[in-house]
Image (cartoon, rainbow, N blue to C red; front, top):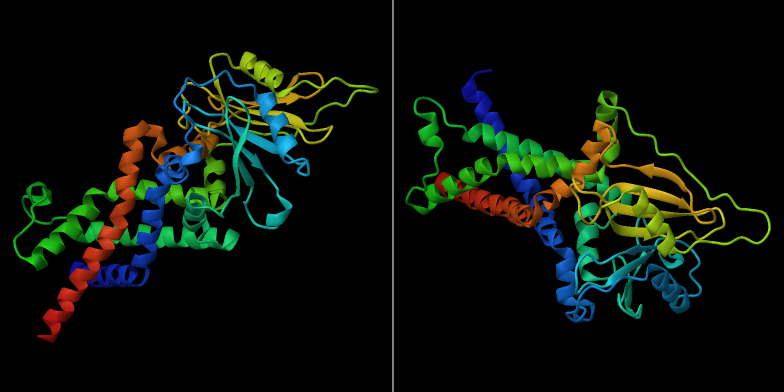
Length: 373
């Protein structure tokens, strides 16, 4: 097949992928942009979550768990706390498996607590308020596990469309580098064509990164066979507390945190999960210097609730290359790995699919008008 016919067929494929699925690509992009700053957006939409400006208190985590059990005595399952990372932020607790939401894929009860007093500020089910509804729309199109597969398929279709568009745009002949420099020609038709091409081409590499990380987050099982055939998966054994005979003393959450920090000195606590059964363990999630995600680090310490012994650890800085690949997916996808500037970059990139869709529709309309004339 000659290059001329190849370009013709690829252009047709690029056109129809954009016409049929461009709206879905734009939807995933816009919702992704909103989610980059969803904690900040949630505080903006719900002023009660903005704690008055005061220094972040020394948090009594055990007191937070006690206040949760007082406020929700009927919920005896697993509670998980997210500790504030800055002043003005609430403590967020998640009750992992509320009976009301069974059998949804992920719909915990989310409770906000005042970090100083432990007073319950509000309680909401995941998916029932704005930012989490947007999250479910972006992650699964509000369709559970089936939706995550659809999202990944859309991501692959967008990947194909972006690659085709980049190939079509690539300058040919002499002075390729000069032709690749952005130059918007006069006239609405030529300007729309140039804007569509340059935005798609210059964002090409970063869009590929967002698409690949997005597919990996939505359907990691699709990537695991390839990643773990190159690098082994770090084993993660299930552990349980050893229940002593007779009356037993249980350590509290503050002690479990102290044991974990002693194991990883210099780290910071981000999450802690309290045991809900006699065999359960404290699960402390720590942020070590060098981890890409500040909010969702991957260092875990599991502590026996009776003996205070460390039963297992996952050191995010010493896992296999395959685990490092998956650990980086989320912080790269939302830009967190590059700090605040990375988050803003991803926010802007999320708007690019919508821009490409709109300019592509306008360009297609121009062709229809010209053909009719």
